[in-house]
Amino acid sequence: MFTSTLLAPKTELPGDLFGAIADLKRELNAVILAHYYQDADIQDIADYLGDSLGLSQEAAKTNADVIVFAGVHFMAETAKILNPNKLVLLPDLEAGCSLADSCPPDAFAAFKAKHPDHLVISYINCTADIKAMSDIICTSANAVKLVNQIPVDRPIIFAPDRNLGKYVMAQTGREMVLWQGSCMVHETFSEKKMVQLQIQHPDAETIAHPECEPAVLRHARYIGSTTALLNYIQQSSSQSFIVATEPGIIHQMAKVAPHKQFIPAPPLNNCACNECPHMRLNTLEKLYLCMKHQIPEITLPEATQQAALKPIQRMLAMSA
Ligand code: 13P
Ligand code: SF4
Image (cartoon, rainbow, N blue to C red; front, side):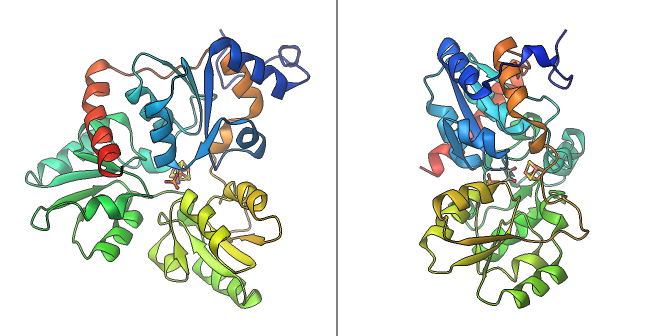
């Protein structure tokens, strides 16, 4: 049987992949939702491209019968939670997330039990099991706004990203109990190399995603979600930017501001480890094959789906 991680025979791939995907989209009444960290050609073929918040809002309102999710597992899972009766496809089922993996359900249940009076706010980069144990889901775009809506006397657990958690604490002045998870991609940026780069490019503005460590964030002029960063580079009068997030976003930045310069923030080693290895498992070929065979499909136990839906719906209502 075909699985996403096996290489498809070359003969199965049409010469015009873009055209074949467009045909399948019509046949299936499918929508392709993609995150900015996907390869450029996937970004180019997507019906909707966005950050995690935009992608969940889009998944919540789509009329398509099939959702093809070009992103990682927790994102496709969120689309499935919002659309239990639709077929949700992920080009490569192995496309996970180190941050989601850093919060195993059993350990989190024990952690939560130690703080029984705390409200649980979980970053969307977590599994459906963690969402099911949460009161409210947030994304990097709305975390500050959502925490600001919680009464000040209500203690909060924030999971799983400690860096986003620390950033939200600094922005809101709220103490929160943090789960100590992190993203392997955003933790590869080197403060030392970033400062060296800033010295080489004194006119460049540094912008960063809040999943970066505080030592990196303190050198950033602007901090925001991927969509917020994309908006910022268009509004800013600066002509060059040092970009501290996964460099897939630079494809869109160069499209919307072709005259500006975008310099990827350097990782610790001279590697490509600032590219998310999970996101990059998806390829245009796998996207075509998953639509052709309608696998791999995201499935969830009904009880988990229902329990995880409530905190996502709360997020959508609170960020409206
Ligand atoms: P946003 O999509 O909220 O910017 O988060 C980036 C990310 O790491 C997704 O995995
Ligand atoms: Fe997960 Fe980090 Fe990759 Fe985003 S960039 S999917 S948080 S590992």
